[in-house]
Image 1 (tube, one colour):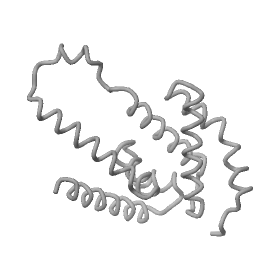
Image 2 (cartoon, one colour; image 1 turned 30 degrees about the vertical axis):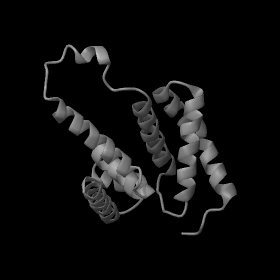
Image 3 (cartoon, rainbow, N blue to C red; image 1 turned 45 degrees about the horizontal axis):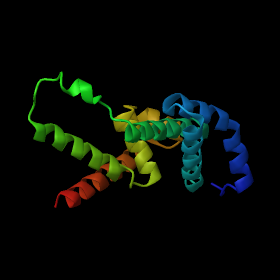
Image 4 (spheres, rainbow, N blue to C red; image 1 turned 90 degrees about the horizontal axis):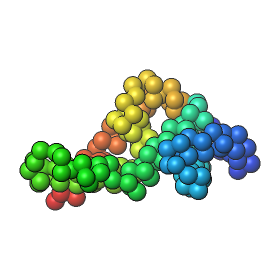
Length: 164
């Protein structure tokens, strides 16, 4: 595939930018953060510009949705503190360990190459099928499986290094 020049990239992405901002705004709740999320995704798409993608608008939408959700999760606790008192008491180490592990896995996921991160998120967080991911990204199912396998191996290796 020929390398995309900057004008073509800008033209193609500017056509979908209003839709992406709407998606981000509906999740993060304000225009300024929505613009930031879309800009970050545009930067990541620029770095991925040489990778063949059948549906760039669909990929951009999924990436904006995921980045928006990540932003909301980072800035807001998922459980209100008042509701914790109503829960039956459980061993604190169990929940703390699970939360710490989840935070570690998400941190390690953010260090994966963009394609591996996208495939991993689509498969394990969004619950998409291999064929659905392949169709969305415009790659073969074999490429999805390979990218997913590499992401899993990398996460496992990094997790083991972290726990060592």
